Length: 147
Image (cartoon, rainbow, N blue to C red; front, side, top):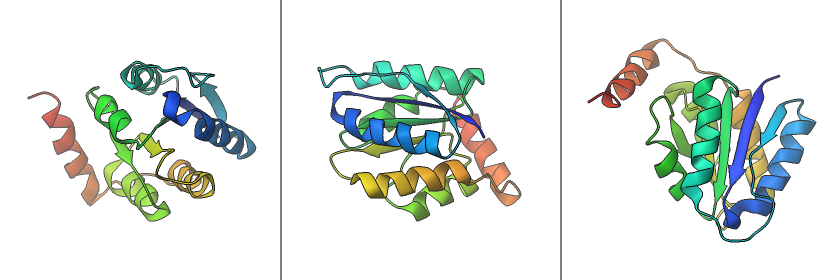
């Protein structure tokens, strides 16, 4: 199995805990980068921790949780080499891995229930990139990072 880095802000702590437990059950090594409490923190700081793990190769995938998933995705996508996607359905999680080679999943505790979030995360980590016709498109996205 793979190593997955995960973090949240204060609005995603309890969902993060559910996801950590599920990912470990699936046999993944999970690096929990915090926080451990619901004391107010800044989501960009935790997006930075997860994206550093992914871009360095220490983790093959990342998961970020905040209130909506949107703030985390904005912050994560500022990092070259990161393709972060907010997913609300299992279909989106599979499609973004297959077609976009997304390497960070972003979820919102305030908008996605725990059971569904677990299924979305399971779909994300178990789906691979299809390559082929999608590779050229991902390369164009990567080129945007260098403009």
